[in-house]
Image (cartoon, rainbow, N blue to C red; front, side, top):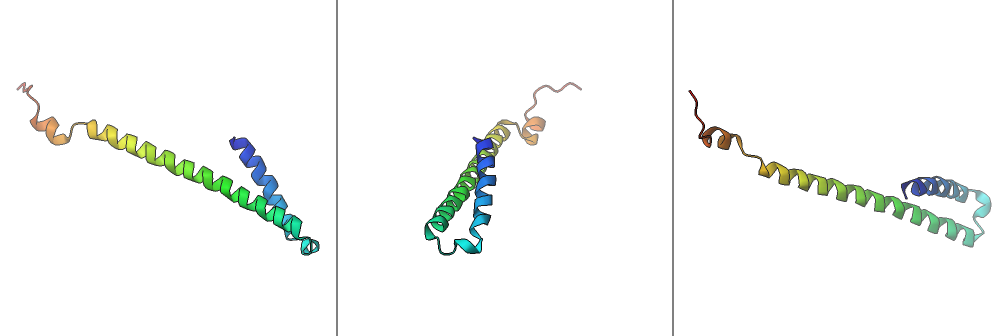
Length: 85
């Protein structure tokens, strides 16, 4: 999926630059189609960005949960019953 997104991004960026041509200003259907494709391209990358942020949050929550299971320094010092002098 990611390779397809990278390839389609390249192609859709090239079509967007084609829209800047002066001879297309009177062909509204072509301009509309290229604009719709540009909206689709931007939605693609918004989707991947949200997915990336979701993964970061899930990783952060997993890290916090594992950190809460670790004993604190105070528990290590005061809770030890094994005192060999």
